[in-house]
Length: 79
Image (cartoon, rainbow, N blue to C red; front, side, top):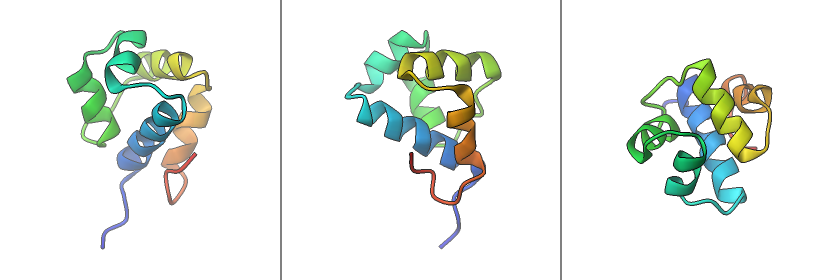
């Protein structure tokens, strides 16, 4: 089995934070000024979010951008 890519780990971290906050994808997307499809692509590791998008996601999740980006350096993508 292949190890998840850094983008997949980032997406997993965002998804885990969203679920821990009890937010539906549509709720987080709206709070971060994204469409649901864009959020789904980020969470799946198929889209590389720019810094502005990461900032909006982090703010909506109540975490720092650094906390989200730390997932890219970790092996499991868990919070």
